[in-house]
Amino acid sequence: MSKPSLILGIETSCDETAVAIYHNERGIIAHQIHSQIEMHAGFGGVVPELASRDHVRKLPGLVTAALEEAGCVSGGITAVAYTMGPGLIGALMVGAAFGRSLAYAWGVPAMAVHHMEAHLMAALLEDDSPDYPFLALLVSGGHTMLVHVSAFGQYALLGESLDDAVGEAFDKTAKLLGLPYPGGPVLAELARSGNDQAYRFSRPMLNRPGLDFSFSGLKTDARRVIDSTVLTEQTKSDIAASFELAVVDTLYQKTKRALAQTGLRDVVVVGGVSANLRLRDMFKSAFSEQGVNVYYPRHAYCTDNGAMVAFAGYHRFKCSDFSPLSIQVKPRCPL
Ligand code: KG4
Ligand code: ZN
Image (cartoon, rainbow, N blue to C red; front, side, top):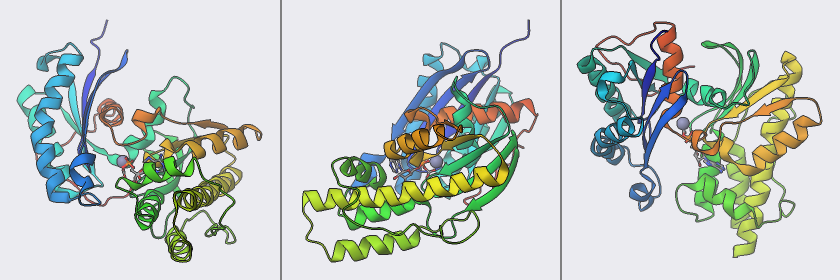
């Protein structure tokens, strides 16, 4: 019987310090996360230097906690995966330096993982997940992409945002509404008690062919509506709901177009914005009527987490795609 593989995954690309352990037969056996939301909230957004310093403070303890949770000692880890980008450079450096050093000390390989590939793979951690090939809609704070996934590591970019990412549009609109950081989930919560027909927001780029997105106009729409409205709890909820509907509808229409173009029948929706309940409900109900299967990660694996890094790292490990001793992190890098 061959020895099982246990991959330690480290994620520090932005404002979550996260560690998980993936066991190739049992799945995720440890999952630790520390969110920096409270620390950044007073500043209305992520302060990169504070993020890096907090990763330094929290990461060692989280690794120890993950090893304890998995009931394994350091010697039991087969390889270490860390996020190499895209993200905040200082924050990435912390996870990369720590992860690479741990692997060196333990005498095991290390794998440098692309953050968006990790998000993509998160959907495949679930029991209900598709076979290759499938379409992926990646929606996070920094990216909006439609990707044709033929196999692990084989990606064809079909469309992406030409300006703001969809999570960024949520966050900026939330700020205009005076909502606290992190804007996206707070706006989504407010939208639940709003009337999504109260205001009309544009559906950007739908009248043009192609699969690219543009969300900066929606933010301008939001500013116009907010400036011309007396803001009460109800009107704020109505604006939030109308905005959210426009975003989700735009994502849905483009995804539908991508499915028609590629002939694919399975779509995974991943990244922080895939936690959005309206998006999840609308995609499931609208696509099921068309015989298209929609898959999501569970909520904890939608936003940044260590499980997705450990799992993507395992796939890199299987291809013997190891990181050299000299670490390199990249704030921007294509999938
Ligand atoms: O993937 P993620 O955790 O970090 C990045 O890689 O960027 O995504 C964070 C983004 C933020 O813009 C956040 O506002 C958004 O995901 N987000 C949401 C929701 N939860 C997180 N946007 C809309 N509705 C949500 N429920
Ligand atoms: Zn992310």
